[in-house]
Image (cartoon, rainbow, N blue to C red; front, side, top):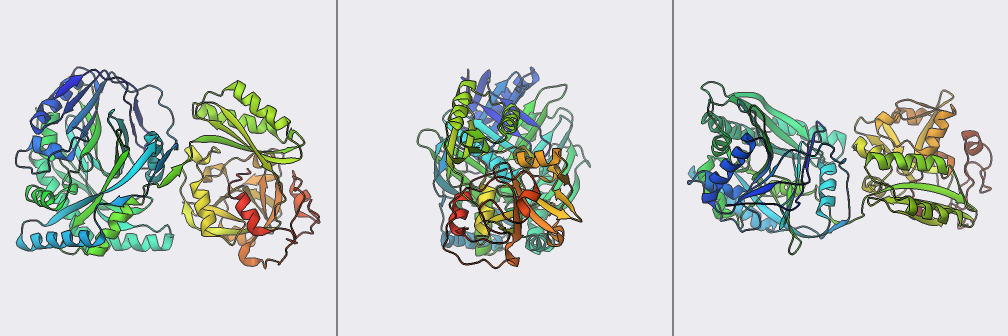
Length: 640
């Protein structure tokens, strides 16, 4: 065990359910346990530091179990992370920065250690152990590996946005970085009451509401998943009884369902009153590792896991949390699932995934579940996070420039980006020097620097052919209220509807939100209506101006409204108002004519939707649209 001064590692814990953020830029010291015999002394030192008024951010590797219970069998730790690590601090930062996808990294495709056939062989071995009575349920896991280059904090932001759970954690240990997006509560403890919420039972989500409802019903009613969860509830009742007052252990919720982007999970909740004199070491010794990631009975099943799994789990299936000081210690730990560990020396990234194997498990079903749990992982190069404005420029005149700059500065203040005024001035000077009609992407990076990226503003097709996305889009307000480089949900929607010029997105509430590049407007009973900001749309500059002059009113809009609308329009600062129709209702004319003139922006629907548009085409005439080219050019325009 070592206790030493620490330079500047970073730690951050985000609860994206409640909005609570704990960020630690500096620690006064760190505590590490590298061998099993050092685990209890390290935890005791952490407990002493908290009793003296310090905060502790704590990580326990799965293999720390051998230091808490000599009968617990695990692989030896491989040195990639300590068995126990803690950063000791005077307190969290009082003004943590907002969490955003930071980008600036690249991940190679993830490679599972086991093939489907190798996984099936191990499931057969678990079933054999069940037949002998050695285990009732075994949480069988494997590792997926990749190469992570660039900024792992960018990966943290992306995983948090994809998962949006209660236990996100970023720990920079110096030689390793831990990025966790765990949805599962291991325990909370306030010195008197301890709670736990095992997560057992999984169904894959498709994004289709009807299929997801069916999956939910099957999960709640399925014998295999219910049995899996109830077994672990019984195990945890026994673990809690070791430290609790007699009769105080209660199951407060059995077989609830929690929804995440790629899976549905069965969750139960328990609580108990700990006996007087119980300390943090006692609580962890009784409960670690969580039964949901071992199986039952715990000790014999851990022995089986060690025989079947090829490598130590490390942080995966361990615990990550924080212990706060006070009259009584306040501890909160997650089960470290959905967790990536990067080796700083060579960039290797490791992610664990698996599931509970019972007699009713099937090899294919379990492997599919494993892959579904890994589906939250990004792959490929991620563009560094930046704020955007897309501005139409005609002969050096930037349209609505003051409105774009006002929105850009407001977003910069929100994300705590200090604008480099000299860089911004230089970017604006470039706008003033442009000839002809240009569409300029103004980019404000995290370091405050700005760049102006022009391209020709070409004519756009009209009417715009729209599709309604069949998947619901759940984008947190933190992102939907600001225009950023985080656009993968837009790109995915466009890819699902290649026949359309643009796609109307729907929020998790099922209502219409916006398109991938513009604000949406429907004329209903003679009034132009647009979705409210509360439904998740960006307050586009064109939209805001139309609201201010009374052209547009806000109201919730549904698919039924779309079909009964007298007219449909898209609205942006760059292109003004453009008539739109549903692609299913339109027969596309054939033409080889290319439109050579940029479209003149319209500030009101009457200028756009009546008679002849600026390309010279009559309303309803798409001659010259050259649609495939326009789709490829416009996929990243972000006009609003």
